[in-house]
Length: 304
Image 1 (cartoon, rainbow, N blue to C red):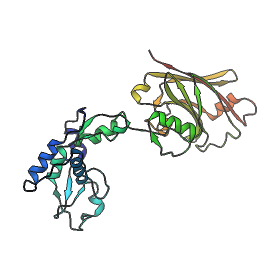
Image 2 (image 1 turned 60 degrees about the vertical axis):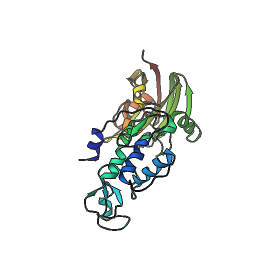
Image 3 (image 1 turned 90 degrees about the horizontal axis):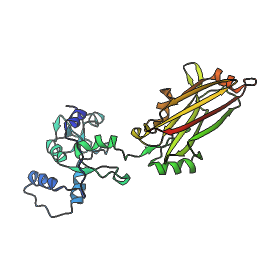
Image 4 (image 1 turned 135 degrees about the vertical axis):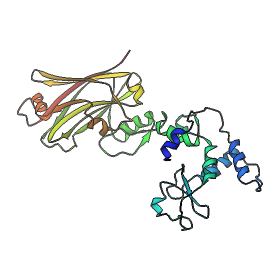
């Protein structure tokens, strides 16, 4: 049975309680080692020692079934077993196909807090459900939405807003309407490098307006789209429109902002925004068509 199917079969409903209780862990350990007297220790210490037992010595991540062991009792996770060429990383003995069922049962008795507890999650989860919960936890930190570099900063929304302003020097605006002008001296050079990011504050939320040039097949195009600084469920409470035009013509786009849980590249590559062919963008710009001068206007509103 794969790890994913094993986890899906477990009961994964969270229980919110005050301090994590692990009396069940102590009972399991006593059954496994009845002859070893256990001196009374705080619950936190017992939980920490058990969690160390469940840490793979190779990747240092928590282990999930099947947990493998060598003939000397050293354990490692199933993902790392092929990496060590079936040799125990601790004693170098051959691993074989021995399962550490005792450790798997101990793990099944654990209830642990979400690793995003410091961000506000108060749930206590069974060990085998904790990983699935954390991949979807509403309190998990967001990645920096800045598109101009591979920024690795993560944090909650207030932290990221300050980070965008102070570290990336992003323009910050208040209000639900905007009117931006984008100018590029040589619009024939499109190398995924013409981009801009502006942050808007309205309705007590933050929104990121992206504008950039990229290649769509062999055709260079411009795209503008809005992302919501929050989760997807809340993003769906808002809508936005974008408009660009010139020489008596205009294009209008209306959509729902995408959550910054979706990467900038994912949104761009799904074409979920106002797409302007370069020839049309130069037509809107007027003049000798050698300089890009686009004015993008728009507004954000909250759905009733």
